[in-house]
Image 1 (tube, one colour):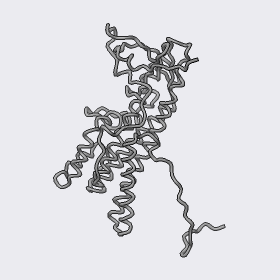
Image 2 (tube, rainbow, N blue to C red; image 1 turned 135 degrees about the vertical axis):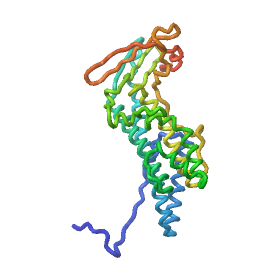
Image 3 (cartoon, rainbow, N blue to C red; image 1 turned 90 degrees about the horizontal axis):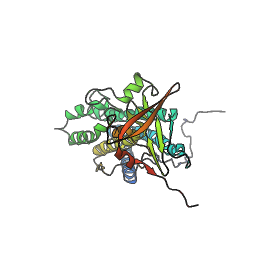
Image 4 (cartoon, helix red, strand yellow; image 1 turned 120 degrees about the vertical axis):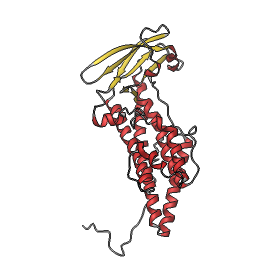
Length: 319
């Protein structure tokens, strides 16, 4: 039995297999269509560069494809958070268990969210390496330094200024989660990578409050960041910045921020957004559990009454 298929004159039969959607269903139609335009433009450019034997352009398009490949990995990780989001509904107490609370802390969700942060930052850093090192020959691969690199080239290259505007329009959604915030506070990604486990960083577990015909689901928080809600935000803005900057250097039209979106919505809410000072007369009380492998605590907080508007009204089939 031999394994050398690299002999001169060897002939092969090639089969092309259709591959799975590399956006994994987590982008809305407009963003998915834009993703397909970028993919097609890179493939066309690479093919033409190969026909011309233009090594510079071949490298350009190969590195663009590498940026998109990192984005594909991020979108796959998003799809896992979508599954966790949908699975949460099975923990809603039964119809006859009204005015009850259930709670759980999901190791799988925490682990996948942590991986989402790592993949998200890796995607932004790969884009940074492409733009900074491989286009402008500057020594950085850290996304939080990309605008400083681009600022050196705005007078010579209009693409640099356009890229800065794209980044600045959405960087606030990455600060604190993927990169240090504007005050220098360590990002959650860095914290989990170097200083804390996700379990010890939990501030509140998934908590579900059930009434007769409505349910209110509180997101699990890690270092005060809601996991599912944060994943949904990153699901929109990482594709937004990656695809648009690739579009800038492909010299094709960009996607508007208002159009770019994920294809899903969190079933839970960011409870911290509605917290009031203890004893506020305009508030309403809800308990939240915090649990790990060795301990569980229940804390009661005061929330703005508008939080009730975030409850799901449950529908039942007629008997």
